[in-house]
Length: 272
Image (cartoon, rainbow, N blue to C red; front, top):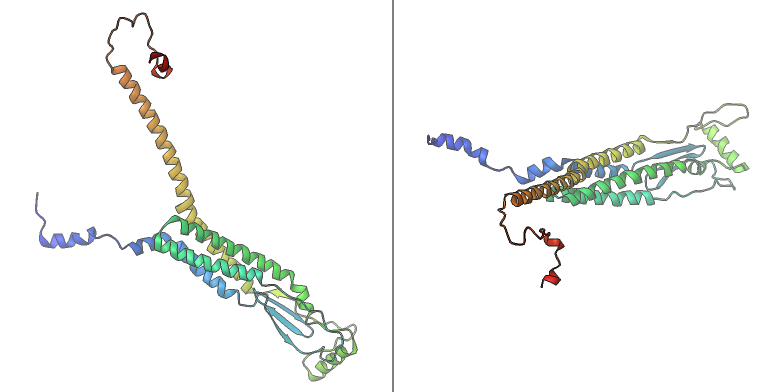
């Protein structure tokens, strides 16, 4: 056999060097990295304006935590009848934030350790983020009319004085009877829908990785184990049959008179 030259040995050396473990784990767990980045993006998008509700006296801007920023023209400054107020809870935004932190922490553990349990936790937390975001979206949408009324106007003389002053200053028009006026409609912003899209995309990527690398792998392992046990049982039975057939039979005086009784059917107590 030809002895390799020194330059051939140096050339073959890099092929025998094992790959770096962190790089290999990153290649196998990159969906969890996407889940972490997507969850962080969702967290920052929660602070953006999700709903805008304009009305006669200004408009309200609401984020995912129910925080309302009001811009008003003070039409009701002298009014004795103030528009009703409302409150928007931020519990769904808080639950989304908690799920985001769990997702990021579990994703880091899944990438660093490369085990199945952190991956399952990452998928579960990312799914919770998507669920809470969509619930928060529908909840804030349900608060559209109550929030919009808070920047309306009263029905007394003070509100009418505010409308007249606004028309005289040129910042608005007085609503004369029979004259059409176009008011901006309340609406959900693109931030709300973008947050939901990012959350669902993140959960989908993590769930796909968990299915093909986790739950699907468990199912395949269980199937392989069951098949292996069945094959081993059949092989053991065939081996026992071959041994019984090939074993030499020795004649005994009682073999012709008494049939051979299986060992498991013998009465060992009576024999003793």
